Length: 47
Image (cartoon, rainbow, N blue to C red; front, side, top):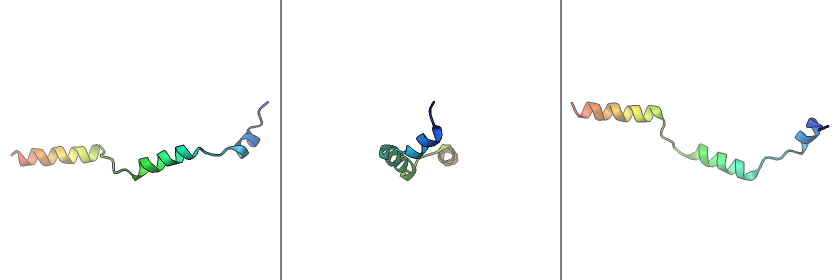
């Protein structure tokens, strides 16, 4: 049988995963709120 406790002690996260995580968190991503604010801004300018 697999000893899960022992396996967890040996676990080391991949550096690639950590690098990708940092890249994702460091990006300034446009979310739905930003898109809606831009749509409302454009709609008000067209009046």
